Image (cartoon, rainbow, N blue to C red; front, side, top):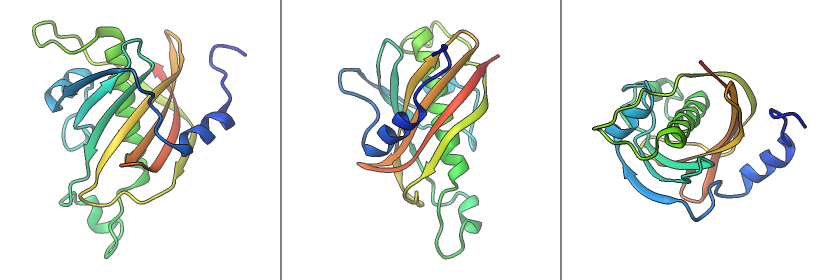
Length: 177
């Protein structure tokens, strides 16, 4: 296999079975200010509220987000049964993936040693599955794992979970600008 090849079928099956991140990482408590050091997004498009754990070798990260009941998107998606849009769940995974790339390069954020956010673009969605609804008021767990790392491109697998329930999964390919 080349550097950008991986077993997509095996990976997508693993994503659906349970938590993506494995024990043994570093527990951290990084809030929105630290997240904003790592990624260029700002509210209302910053969808990662914090980082809770990561593997210092840069293999995985676990963060969290909160689906705000007052988010205007929920009024129309869908009236009477608001569901957080799947494309925004993919965006959450992409953003936690950017945090993973930043942490792998820089370690735990230090305000006295700022580093620029990671500049990357999603170029391909290899897989996406929406398995359970994410609803207003849900606090979701966002997990990302590095599948392929190359100086030019990378592949991240990710999950949005509500507790132990896997709500969505995806595999994204990114180009580092």
